[in-house]
Length: 168
View 1 (cartoon, rainbow, N blue to C red):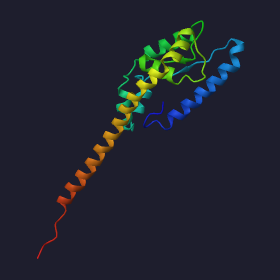
View 2: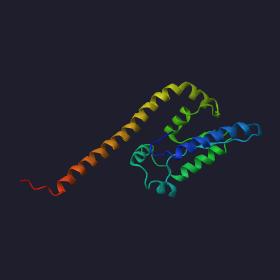
View 3: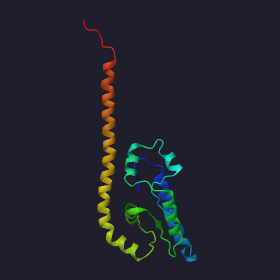
View 4: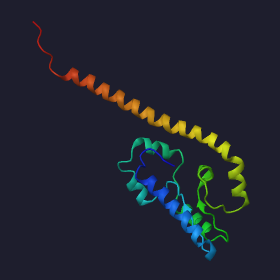
């Protein structure tokens, strides 16, 4: 999903997913499974480093999904990889499932539940996604408004500090 502030990360994730879809199709006949993992924000040193310089808008949008412990993420990734029929998409939480379903496109399905839920719930999930998007855009708009207000206040207050011309 394209999120504010991830203009370098998101296209590479899309590319990896496309590569994984091709590899899955090419190697299924050899009984080789390919997975794409969509881990949530995970409390790692890399995550802490990512916070430096991260736009406030991105932080606010991401914060709504929470921060996962690395042990939980690793355990699920391994568990899903070791299943007899590994899923193509490995996701976390309700929002992760919703996004995996919404963006399933032509990707492989793991089982009947995935197939039916994607078919039956696609319209409803798309409707729900509008509320997420409205929330994200509201965060971005409010940040812009606050920045503009701050700039105007600084400009107004700084002019008060400048020496005023003498009047005759």
